[in-house]
Image 1 (cartoon, chains in turn yellow, green):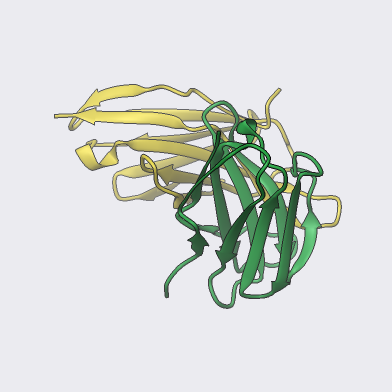
Image 2: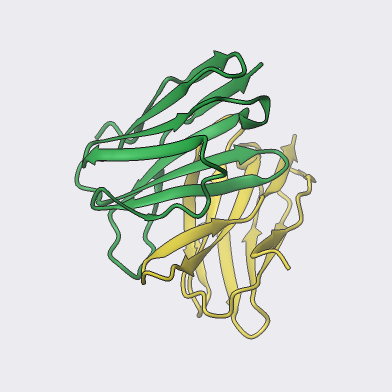
Amino acid sequence: RKEVEQDPGPFNVPEGATVAFNCTYSNSASQSFFWYRQDCRKEPKLLMSVYSSGNEDGRFTAQLNRASQYISLLIRDSKLSDSATYLCVVNRATDSGYSTLTFGKGTMLLVSP
Amino acid sequence: DAGVIQSPRHEVTEMGQEVTLRCKPISGHNSLFWYRQTMMRGLELLIYFNNNVPIDDSGMPEDRFSAKMPNASFSTLKIQPSEPRDSAVYFCASESGLQGSSYEQYFGPGTRLTVT
C-alpha cells in the first residue's frame, strides 16, 4: 500500500460547485496532516493544516479520520482560480527521531466557467 | 523575504555531463529538503538536512547523486554522470521546524532538468 494515496482526477466542475477530495495514508503513527496546492508548472504551497477536530478556512474545509486513516478536503463555491493540483501530505518519522513529509501524487481540479 | 531561491531555473544537458543544482533557503530556517517531481512518481524526497547535517538520504537514487550543505545559506545537489531518466523538476524546500515535528515547508520555484 502506498504511503499516501489520492485519486489523480481530473475533477471537472463548473464555477460555484462544491467538490470533495479524499486521501488515505498507511502509517498509523502519523501525527501531522496537510493539504498543499500546486499550480501548473509552479511549486507546491501550503493550503491548510488538517486537525483532528476538522478545520475550516473560508470556502475550504479539511477533515481527518484517524480510525480510517483518511483525510478529506471540501471546496465550496468553486472559483476559476481554484484550478490546481491538490496534494495530500502526511508526516513520517525517521529512525533518527526527525520528521519529514510524504506527499501524495495529487488530485487535479479544473473549474470551468 | 525573498523566499527559497534556486538556480538555474532550467537546465538542458547531454547524457554523461555533470549537473549542479543550487539552493538558498529562507534565512533562519534550519531544515532543508531536496525533492524530485515527475509525472510518474510524483514528489519524492531525495535528502534532508537539519542544521547543515544530512539526516536522511535514503531517497537519493544512487551514487550518481550527491548533496552538500556547507553552510546555513547554501546547498547543492549534484548529478554525475547525468542520464535521461534524471529528467524531472527538482525542488528545494526549507522549514523552521524542530526535531520530531513537521511545520510548513516553503518551496523554491524548482529547476527543470532535461537530460538528452
